[in-house]
Every structure is written in C-alpha cells, then in structure tokens.
Length: 356
Image 1 (tube, rainbow, N blue to C red):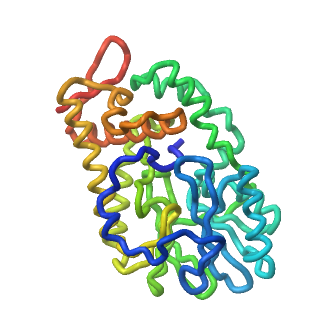
Image 2: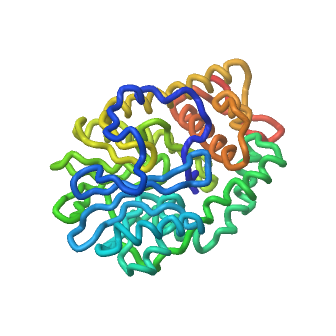
C-alpha cells in the first residue's frame, strides 16, 4: 500500500512557494465561500500535518462533498457543526473521495449512513481502501517486516513502524459495498459546472483531481500543495516500484494541460494561484533530494535506511519513519531505473546502492 500522508519532516520550504498568490491568508473559522458556489472548510488531524481541507460544491438541491476527514471520534464530532449549518437545509448529494488515505475518506461511512448518497472514487483507490477496511491486520504481515529489514532498517525500528507507524491507516468509519467509478477522461457535472476528471500517481496510485476549465478551478487533492510536498513512497507490495517517476510525470502533465490562471484548491494548506510555479518548485525539490542521495552514495554504498538521515535531519517517530523510509526508497528506485545509482550485492542480505 502507498504511504498515506505528507512529507512530515521540516526541511527548507519547497522552492516556488514564495511565488504564489494566496487569496485567503488564513484558514476558515468554519467555512469560506472560496469561489461562487464552493465552500471551503478544514478539519483537524492529530499529526504534524494538523489539518485536511474539504469542499462543498453547489449541486442543485444540495452539496457535493470533496473529501471527508478521518473516521476517528474527534473528526466525527467536528462534523456536527457542519451538519447543523451547511447541511441543515441542503443535504449532501454525493461524496467524492480523491484517494484512499483515511484523512480524505475516513469519515465517508459515517456520512453515507446519514445521507444515503453515492461514493465516487477511482477503482484503484476504492479497492485499496476496501482492503484496509476488511483486513487492517495485513499491515503487520511478514512481507511488511521484510520490506524494511531488507533495506537496512534495524529490527527494533521495524517493529515500531509496522505496529505503531501504520495505526493511522485504520481510522476509517466504513465503506459502502458499491461505489461510482471515476476514470481519467470522464466529465463530471456538479450543479451547473462541468469538471474534467484527471488522475495522478505517486502519492497514491490513482488519485482523483477535478478541473473546471470554464471557471478556472482546479481541485488538486494532494498532488499539488502550496507549502509542502506530498509523501511519495514505495509500497511494500511493490518494492521495486517507481512512484516518484509516476509523480513527476503527473506534474509535467498538469503543468502542460491546465491553464496557468486556475485557482488551485488543494487537500492541505491554503488555496492559491500560481500552479506552474508551484509545479516547478516541486520538481526541483525532488531533484534536490536525488542530488543529496547521489552525494551520499558516492562516499560509500548505502541502504535506504542509511540514507534517511541524509534527507530527513530531525528525529523521526515511528509514524514519520515509515513515510521517510518509503520516500527515500522512492528516490533510490527512481535513480536505479535511470542509471545514476546501481545495486550492490552483499552477503548480509541488506540491499545497498552506490553511485553509478
């Protein structure tokens, strides 16, 4: 499974953030009409990244909801003021979950029981989420342990990561047995607007994004954020995968395929103008991380675990270590595929790489 969150270290700001135009310099108290017929709200998260954005889109007799927040008790309680105000006279018409991470779909079960409306997701994201919901214990399976151990993480840290670092993935309030599938290239009509459905990999396998070209609105989910980079991690079930390559291809496609003057409505941080500048900054950020890894591997062969301190300089708890390890390995796999690193065979069984 893909890592479910955002890069949670605190490095220097990703280049390009200083070039953006923030139409609202602070988050909403409860809701802000960020564009005609679109309400922006924010729900708290109990992590270093302490919030997730949700959006209500005018859908005729009610509101289409984009993302839901976690499925924990605190988030479900935080929904009550929104139920009493925004949804008091105009109910939900549907829920659009951009991807399977619990901060975006965790409260879906709670809301669907109340409103009995369809859930819209891409197929891969729905199936990933369903797998978590039906078999949460799989996160502690042997192949997860081997994934970390084979790439140099010590046994004690591995134990903490697989038992504590993945607990967040279980914060789901349920899923319906059926859903409405969204596919890249679809046109989704919400109220009086038409949105093109886009998908992108890297942060999650088939994340949904929506662009209304007529009104120049872009719901970017976690693919493009204003001040931080989404976590881009190798999955234990696909240990030789190339999520960073997928992510960078997605960024290039967004830069070339969306009008530069769109208002970006992201899953975290503040809405902004300046999509091309932000994309350039994110691309530069990941190339800078590749440069750090290459310099470290020129000195001596290193495992992914041994490379983590070269990218993340602060002390990491198990939750953050899982993300950091997966992201470093994503950069290693990207560089292996493109020939700037090569693997080293050793008798210990630990997988290491060196500069090519």
